[in-house]
Length: 287
Image (cartoon, rainbow, N blue to C red; front, side):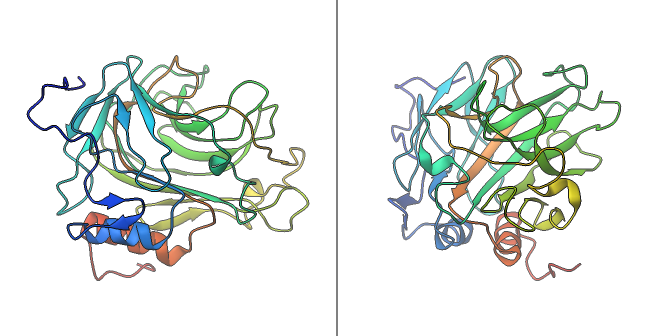
């Protein structure tokens, strides 16, 4: 549940940043994220709702439903908390902005988040059930989405994928990982959408799990010019939603440290963020 305004802590902002500048108490992870210059960064550490604060450019969001605040966060050694969504209509919504579109900057778009799926088997948006847990798009103005398949899926059990669409939607171009998941375990997910469209050689979608690139160009299905789709992304007016896209099927689990970047993150940046967030320092990106 969202704590009332009379809750003991009276701050409505996440700890650490002010307009993209790290405070003296900022964690190493937070400093690394800010060094990568995100266009928006929601730490999810609010003590009360309904506002969720973007510490970079004021892209503040609004809580809906009955989420729980101050859930234990994803980061090792960082007391900043997370938000738990109950799957019963709880989600976070940010008004549409051109900053959230793949084609705005000319340098692509990256989405970074820590996801903790607490329920692995659920009903979803189709007979092969899935939910969109972080997405921007609506009918006739689809843009991109991060998708999570139920364990009940016949072909894609617990697959986590990133898709980009033509405005008409239907099938999209994407990348994924499909591993055995453990309910209640945090996963660091980064999706990178290259700049360009079907006319851009080798441009496509990449996805990372826990710091490691799992799929992306030159793999054919990840490319914008993957026939017969031919991707020409366009900005739309749909809001950015965390926990759902269609408002009917929602994530049961927690979200933490959500950041959007107006470019494609490098593999080394993704790995550094994961190491600092997980506390698993000193290992190699190639291991």
